[in-house]
Length: 278
Length: 278
Image (cartoon, rainbow over all chains, first blue to last red; front, side):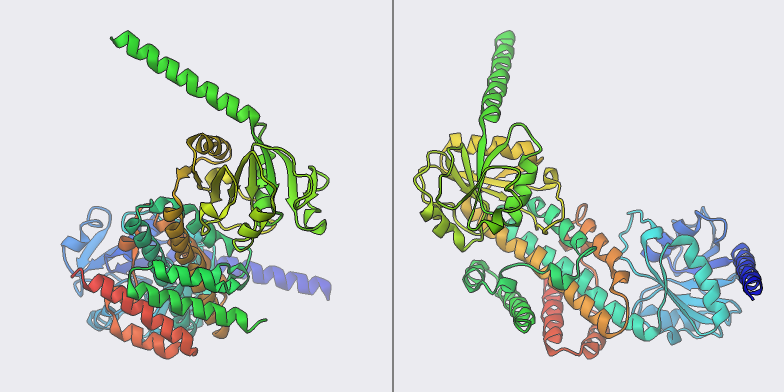
C-alpha cells in the first residue's frame, strides 16, 4: 500500500508541475488601465519570462505614454489582442463601464479592486486579482511581499490566476467577493484612517513648533509591534490605563473641535473595550 | 586673520572634545524604577563604558530581581548612592511621590515621562530624559534609532544630559516641557489611536473569517510611506475621493454601532479636510 501511495503522490506532484509549466509558459496578458496599479503590475510582470504583457490599453494617448516604447499600446475598444488574461486595472467606478466597452473576449477577464464584486465584469470567464497594498506613483514596490487575493468562478481559471500570482508574490490567498468586501473595509481602518491619525499628529506638531520627524521611529515601531503581538495586546496609552487626568489635559490642549471629538470617541471606545475585560 | 580664525576653531573643537571626554568619563547613574523603560535603559547603558549604572532602586525586592545579580540594588529611600544622574523611570502618577521620598540629592534628578512637567521633580538640579518610543517587555530595542528629548533648567545639566543621550542615541532633541506636552499628545494619535485602528481591522477580519495577516504588509507600508511623503499627501481612500457609495456600503457592513460612529466621524473629517482644498 505504501509504495502505491508514494507513486500516486509522485504522479500528482508531476502532474501539478507539468500543469504549472504549461500554464506558465503560455500566459499572455493584456493590461487595461494606465494608473498606479497598472504601471506597477506592468513593471513587475516584465521581470519574469512566465508573465508576458503583450498589450496595454488606455483611454488616451497621453495616459499610454509610459508604456508606448515598451509594449504595443491601444486606445480602449480598438484592436485588443487575444490573450490568456485581461487585467482591468481601472478605478472602481470605471470597472462596469470599461467592461461593457470590451468586445466579447475569449480569455479570462479580471479586475484588481478590493471593493467591487467579481460579477461587475461582463464576460464568460471572470475573476479578481487584487493586490492588497497602497501604491505610490514613482515608488518601486516589491510584489514578493504583497499579498494577492484571487477569485474566479471556474476552477481552471483560479488555477491560471494562482499560477501568475505565485510568480510575482510569496503570499497568494483565495478570497471570495464577500470576504474581499470586508477585507477592504478593514484596510480602510488600518491604512486610510491610520494615515489620518498621522495627519493629526503632524498638525499638532506643526502648531506647536515641534518637528514631526521625532515621531517617525514611534510610527514605524507601532506598525512593527503587531508582527509579534495582537493589536489587542499591543494597546497602550491613557485610555487603556483609564488615566482620566491625562485625557482631560489632552482635550484641553486640542485647539480643533473636530480633533477633540475624535480624541473623545476613540478614548471612550478603548476604555469600553478594556473596561469590559476587568 | 585667516590663520587666527583657524586656530580659534581648532581650540574650540579641542575644548569641546575635552569637555565631552571629562563628562563622559565621569557619568555615574542611579536608576530609580524597575519597569519597561528602566530595564531597557539599564541594558542600553550597560553597553557603553561612558554610562555606568551604579545602582537600581525599586519599591520591592521582587521588582529588583532582574537587576540584583548585575548591579547594586536598593529599596526606595534606603542608602541611595551618590551619582551624577538619578533617572526616575516610574509611571507618570508615581513621579511626584517618588520624588518626595528621595532625600536631598546633589546630582541631577531627571524623569523619563512624556507628559509630566520637569518641575514635578523636587530637587535643586532637575531635568527630563524622555525616549520617545513604545517599549515592549522582553523585546530588545536599538536605542540608536530612538529620539531622546532632553530638558534641564541649568545649561551645565543640559550638557550632561546631552552627552549621555548622544552616547546611546543618534537623535537627541532639546525639547521644553511645553513642547513635550504636545509631542506626547501627538504620540497618542500616531501610536495609541493607530493601534486601535489596527484592533478594529483585526475585529473585522475575525468576524468575517479572513486572516488579519493579509493586512500586515499594508500596515507596514502605510507607516513607511510617510518617510518620503507628508501624511496630507499620502492620504487615500473613499473619504478622500468623496466616494459616497463606498462609504455607505462600508457603514452597512459594520455590525458595531461604535465602529460605525468612528467610521463616520473619521470619514467626515477627511472629507472636510480635503473638501476645503478644492
